[in-house]
Each structure stands twice: as C-alpha cells, then as structure tokens.
Length: 319
Image 1 (cartoon, rainbow, N blue to C red):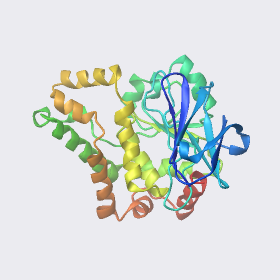
Image 2 (spheres, one colour; image 1 turned 90 degrees about the vertical axis):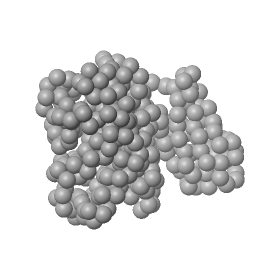
Image 3 (cartoon, rainbow, N blue to C red; image 1 turned 180 degrees about the vertical axis):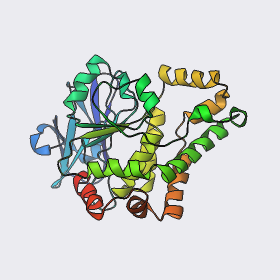
C-alpha cells in the first residue's frame, strides 16, 4: 500500500502524487467513478517517480487508480472546486486502522450550499447526492435557503452573537470559544450525530452531504466523530479538520470577519473564531475519550446508535 493524492495544479491539469516506496512500475488509470474496473489506462511510470501529470482536467469528477504489484488504490481530489462553496470535500480515501480506507464518493462535508451557482449545481447533481443534512439553525436556513431539498437537523451549538464581547479580546479567546463550543456539541448534539450516522448506515442510503454555514465547526465535529468511528487515526482526523483553514479564505471569510467586528468582537478574536485550531478539536476529542469513554461508548450512549447501525456504518463506508 502507498499513499496517493490528486491535486489540481492551477494550470488546468491534475497531478497525482504518491509515496515513491518500492520498485517496479505503476499503472495509472482514470475514470468518472471510484470503481477501478471502469477506469481507462492512462500511463505506466516507475514507482520511483513519485508523481505524474494527468493532463487537462475533464468535466465532472475525476478518479485515479494506481496499481502496483497487484494492489490498486483509488484517489480523487478531495476538494470539489465549486465557484460558490469553497469547503466542499469528499471524506473518502482516508486509511483506517481496521484495514482498507474510507470510500470515495459516499459522504461529503461542506460549507453553506446556499452559495452554489447555477453552474455549480450541474456538477453537484452529477455527484448523485441523494440526501443533504443541513445542520444549521432554522433562522440560518430561512435567511440563506439551500437550492435543493434537505433534511433539517439543527445541531446544538453556541451562537457567537450570544458571546460576552468584553471577554473576547484576543485570538486565544476566539480559539478557546471554539473548544468550548465543540465540548458543548458533545454534550448536547448526540441525537443529531446518531440520526445522521444511522441514516448513513442504511444499505440503500445514497451519497450524502452534511453541512453548516462555514463547514468548520458543526460540520467539523460531525466529520471528526464519523471518521473516528470508521477507524481513521486521530492525527488524520485532525488533518481533515485543519483543511478548512486552507479552503475557507478569501473575500467571503473577510466579510464574515468584518461582521463579527461590527458586532463588537475584537478583530483578533474574530480571526480566532474563524480559524481551525488543531488544538481545539484535539482537546474536544480528548474529552470524548476521557469523559465519554471513547467513540464507541459515545455513539452507543449519547447518540443512541444500535450495534447493527454501528457495524453497518463501517461496512458501508470502508472498503
């Protein structure tokens, strides 16, 4: 087995990279689905090369399969590059400690789908997503409704507008606020996590996406718990959380920051609130272990999931 990733190079091409471990040649094939039997051979290169350029990016999703010594691994670019949402990502391709990896194209996480453009919707629909779990509050959905039918599952979390602004004076205060919010979600949002994960465990469940406003906090905790149960190691779970800091940037983030400042929050605090500090999620997952007995105990207890649902969740989302 070897780690691989697919990235767009900014010049209209995709590049596939892998750990150049071992000898011999590597057969590279591409296709529109995660099924390698549907992929067309593109090239054969030495394993030692470590990367290969795949040429022009075709319309729609591109999956890449690499085969060496009878072992085939499939990958895709994790981020779906929409014009609107900037933090729409596939949770597939993460190695698990149980063997195998999370399945590509089955579960996605995102920021606000309200921002999908008409062009985005063509590509969104091509993903065959059958269920959208909207974790936002009722007032958030009313103000910025999504463009497709959804399941409304407001996930209990703190409101920045309810914070005491006089104590939110520096970046550390903003990051600490996030940590406390994540701990609050563990305490109060178990039934929401249980509903989403139990639905995902159904054998006939279609590809799904869960999202909130920024795709960072409510979505981030949901993703962290799901990946933890699927057997993804803790450091990789935290890596996935931190990706939000890479993709949530630009004008929209600055607009939200200015809104926070306009509400009386110091700018350094606003920047902390909008960040994805690794320590905050790591701390919350330590609370999960120490206070709730770990991911299995939490999902059986706080989330009220059945043994069957827990087993089926892994069977369906890990290959």
